[in-house]
Structures are given as structure tokens and as C-alpha cells.
Length: 481
Ligand SMILES: Cc1ncc(COP(=O)(O)O)c(C=O)c1O
Image (cartoon, rainbow, N blue to C red; front, side, top):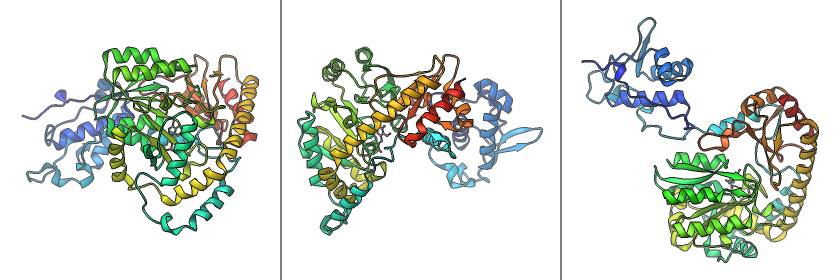
């Protein structure tokens, strides 16, 4: 007896960043290759499946078209879609299809949704308040180039693999800077990273297994959400208000759940720009210890706060894994960050890093070391002043050009403004309208693990020329009207 499509097991996950058409394709591909849908099985008509799954018909059309292109189904006008003959009589059903069709299932999160959005929003000559990159001025380039020239003279180490832990003198400098911020750490606790993104990946893979739960802020950094999703982790969201993460919500979660870690940005949170107050920091660390759940502190913006906030790590180096980066203070192209981890798990993270890239570039580390010694503090001071000026310009323009009811989170010290559109306006619609007027931003849903952010959006104030801030904000205001 042939399997009818009425028994077809097919559901879609709307929270996933894998597009729905791709999920439909994947589920059907798996069932066809496994023999659950044998040759000749009629697939549901596009319209019925679309109705059953509550999706657009074009979504199902797209999935079927890809299945047909891969030789898994045959589509005939008038008689619908049927599972194709794959094996030509051979026992291995996959032997008749191209190799890429037989790859392991494409589980979760491998679609770089946010990266796609970034590329789209940066399009053309728009004033794109999109990427979180340092402003063009003050430029670190001249001093950095001089430092690289000096480092290049020492060929004993700059052209080798070097230690996986990182370049010793740089680790010592970083540990010294962190001790000045109240953290009782040693250079041996520092692991250099090829960007802090690598650190988030190491933590996600080393501290948790697919299916495990973790706590994240809502909203939070989309790059981290993507890493967690690829690692198969399930994010439990905790809201953020003007004093940072709602620690009372964390407490409620810990009463009944056992997440593997709590991912937080206590200083200049991305995207809201808020900094966690002292009382919540204290309570969060106490909670983490009481429940035996480590904190993952992501702190690339910490040194931009006037004055730099003491990290959570300063409260307890045993319960905090600290991550930071030079991407936001010098340049993301360096791909250089670091983490600080307790001795108990340092080796775990180190071995995994080795398996990814052996070591971060010695040449880059040596160049940055010289820059840190001579130029970094002056650059940080100039950068803080620049950010303050940009924020003032932006707030003045918002006051002048935005309609009543569209406002930004107050009190941020960083790169971003987190905005709320008027109640009846969805941020995606506002973005489409703003793009037509030559301005763009990142819409709020990208910052949420599940739902949320429909009416929010993030303005990055640094990637545009300072002189364009007012005009860009005016265009967004016009789009909102
Ligand atoms: C909170 C946060 N963590 C990590 C990163 C990524 O940093 P890196 O360039 O060091 O990988 C970013 C970049 O936007 C960020 O905002």
C-alpha cells in the first residue's frame, strides 16, 4: 500500500531562523531518503499544505521547487507532485541523487539571517545606522601601522604559530588592565581569541550540549543568538530595563530550571546601551553561586563607559567567564579578542580553540601589544569623546525630527540607540519606508530569541559620517510620518 500524504508528519518551527520553506524542504527530504515516503507517493497539493501549516502558498511552492531540482520529487502539471524514483532498483535509496542531497539534516540556525539583513540594509548610498563598528575618526590606523612595523622587526615570533593561549606579553598587559578594573586575575587566566565571537562559540560548545537551556537577555546580541542556535541550545529570555537584566526574572527561572549558563552584557548592553546597576550585579553573582550556574559576561564595550564599570568578573572569578574584544575599540578587522576563565575549565576551552584555529595570529597580537603600550589609552579617551558627541547630535535630531511617540532608551553610553516606534508601527514596515528615503537600521526582532521587538529598532551611531547623523535621523522621522 502506498503511503498517502494525509499521514505526512510535518511541522514547522516559527521561532527558528531557518526559513520556513527550507524547513519544509528538509523534513520532506529526510522522509524521502529514509523511505518513509516511498517512490510514487503523492505530496499534498501546495495550497492544502500551505493551509495546514498556515504559511503562504509561495513558501510551499519554493520548497517543492527545490525538492524537484534535487531530483527528489517529480512535478507534473495537472497531477501534482510525487516522490521520484531515486534508486534505479538499487538498495541504497540515496545512490541516485547528487551527494549534496544526502548530507546530514540541516538542523537549526545555520542560516545567517542577521548577516543577510545587514547586507541588505547596507545597500547603496543609504545612511546605514547598521553595523556596530568604530567610527572613522579617531582613526587608530597610523599608530597601529607604526606598531606593526616595530613588531615586524622581531621575526623570532611574529611569523610562527605561537602558543594557543596567546602571546605572553599581550596576555600580561591585558591582565594588568583588568586588575586595574578590580579583577583579581593572572596572565595565565587569559586566553586570546580570534575575535570574541570565537569565545562565545567556545563557551556554547564546551559548557552545554544540544537541547540544553541557557539564559539570555531580551533583547540581546544577535550574533550570540545565532551561535547558541547552531549549538542547539534553547534560550530562556529575561527582559532588560533601564538598570540592565531583570535579575528577579533570572531568580524565578533558577527556581525551576537548570540552565547551563547565563549570557549577559552588564556594561553598555547591545542593543539597549544600558548598564546594569551595582545592586543587580551583586545579586546576579550571588544567585549564580547559590544555584551553581556560571555567568558568561560579554564585555566588548566596558572600557567605553565613563568611567569603565567594574566587570562581574571582579565579584567572583570562579563563577564568571569573561569575554572581550578589540573590535569595538580599535578595529574589527584585527579579529582579536580574549576571554578570562577559571582554571577549572580553561583547558577545555583551550583544546577546543586549538581544534578551530591552533592559535590567534601572533603578528596581530604583537602589533596590538605595542599599540596598547603606547597609544591605546589616548585613543580610548578620544573615542569616548567622539561617541558622546555623536549621541548628543542624535538626541538633538530625534527631539527635532521624530514624531511624538517614537523615542529612544535613555542613559546609554555606547554605540547604539534602542528605539521604540509608535504602537501602530511595526519596525520592519518603518525600515522599508526609511530605506526608500535613503536611511536604514536593524529591526528589533533580530535581537530576540523567540518573539518580541516588533516595534523596536537599533540605530548604530558609529558607521556613518558624523555629519550624516542628523539627516539620517530626519529621514527616519519622515518615514515614521
Ligand atoms: C556584545 C557583542 N559581543 C561580541 C561581538 C563580536 O565581537 P568580535 O568582533 O570580537 O567577534 C559583538 C559585535 O557586535 C558584540 O556586540
